[in-house]
Length: 322
Length: 301
Image (cartoon, rainbow over all chains, first blue to last red; front, side, top):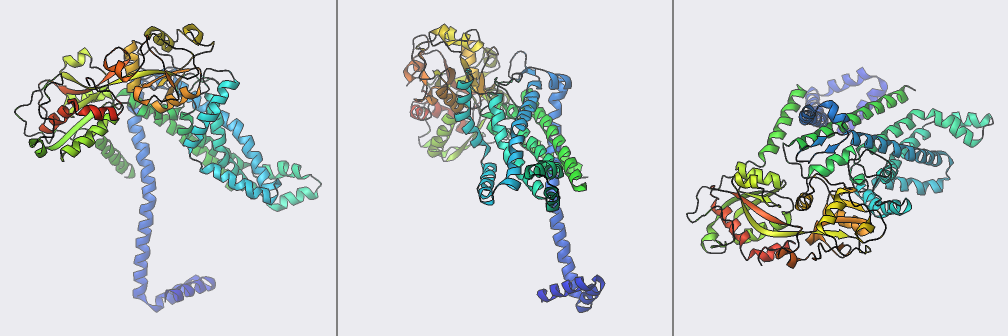
C-alpha cells in the first residue's frame, strides 16, 4: 500500500502537485490524518534533536562565561590578559597573567600554518591534478589515516623521537620547546588542509583548465594560474580549519612543549592556552582563584575559537557567493 | 527562553559539582563508646576491623585529599571492603590542602594529606595520623656520572644558581631541570622539604610522574624528582648527602627528602564507627603489607 502511495505521489510530483494532493485526499482522509500525525511527531523528534545540539552549545557558552568571569574580575582584565607572569600556586603572591600563553598559542599556531599550509597545499595540488591515479590511490588513504591517528600518539612520537632530536641537533639542555610543538601541530593540521583544499580544487570546472591549456599554457601554469585562483576560497577555508585545529589542540603539545609559562621563544619551554588548563586542572582545588583562572583561560580560548569559526563562515559564505 | 533554560541547566550542573563532596556524614549516628579521638600514634589499634563486632559495621566513610595517596587508598579501600561488607569507603582526590580544609570544615570524615600538617593547621584542630612514608627520589639519566648531591646543591640546581653539571662533578653540560606542575603533591613536598617553594626555575614541567621519568631516561642532561615507588631501571636515583634513597633509609629517616602520608582527623570530633575502624585499620601493623603493595613505605615496620 505504502509503495503504491509513494508511486502515486511521485507520479503526482511529476504531473502536478495539486493533482497529487487531491488524489491522496480523495483516497482516504482518515489515513491522511494518521500520516499527518506521524509526520508531526517525527518533526518534533527532529526539532528536539536539533535543540539538543544548540542546547549544549548554549550550555557550554553560558557555563564558561559564568565560571570564567569571576577570576577575570578578581585579577583585572588588563592584568589577566596582559600580565606576563603566570604563577598560580605561589602561596604568598600568586600571579595570573596569561600573555605568555596567548602569545604561545598565537605563535605556535602561526608556525604550524607556515610549515603546514605549503606542504598541505602542494600535496592537495599534487593529489587533485598532477598525481597518476595509482599513486594518488596510495597517498590519499595515507592522508586520511594521518587524520585518524589520536593526538596522544602524535605527542608520544614527538616526545620519544622529535624532542631528543631537537636536543642533540640544536645542543639544548632539553628538547621540549615551542619548535617541537610547532612541528607536531604542522603535521596534525596536514590532513584537514589537504582534504579540504583537494575538494576545492576538484570542484574547479574542467572547462577552465581546458581553455587555459588550449590557449597554450603549460599544465603547471594552468594549475597555479587558473585552478588555484578559482579554488581560493576553498583553500582559505582549509587554512582557517587548520588554524582552528592547531589552536585547540592540547594533548599532543602537552607532551612536547615543556609546559613552563615562559614568554615564547623558539627553543624554550612554553605553555599554550590549552595545555595551561590541562596541566593545572588536576590539582586546582574547587572554588580557588587558581581554578577560576583556569576557567577564564578556557573562556579566552573559547573566544579565539569563536572568532576563527566566524572567519570560517565568512570565507565559506564568500565561496558560495562565488 | 532558551537562554534561561541554559542558565538554569548551568546552575544545576554547578550545584551538582559542589554537592559532590558535601553529601557525607549521614552514616555516623551511633558512636562507639571506646572511641578516642586525637590518637596521634599507632598505639590504640585495639579492634583492627576483623573481629566479630566489626562485621556488623556499616555506613560510609568519606575521605578526601591528596592525589599522591590514591594508590594507597585504593588498596586500603579494597581490603577494608573485604573485611567489612557493610562499609563503603569513598575517596576523592582533590589535593592535600583541599583534604585538610574539607575535614576541618566537616565535609568529609577523614582528610588525606601527603605532607606534614603545618602548625596553623594543627592549631585549628587538625590531628596528624601518619599511615605511611614516601621517599622523593632525585633521578638523573643513567649516563650521568654524578654520584652524590647534597640537599643544598639540589636546591641550588632547582633555583637556577647551578646551571651546569660540571659544577657538581658531572660533565660540562647545561642542566635540564625537570619537575611536576604546580599543585602536584610531589612537587609541593619536594619544594617544601628543600625550602625552595615558589623559587624554582624549571626547564620543563610535566603532568605526571611517568612523564618525568620518561624524560629523564631520554635526556642525559636532565634531573628530576619522583616518588621512590615510581623509580625504575631507566633512571638513576642519586644519593642525597651520601644516603641512598631506599625503603630502609626512608624508614629510619636518614634519607631526608621524604614525606608522610597523613590521615587527618579533627580534635574533639568523634569519628563514626566505620571511619574509626578504617583509621585503625590503616594505622595497624596489618596495613603494612598493603602500603608496600601500593609502593609506599610503612612507618614502623
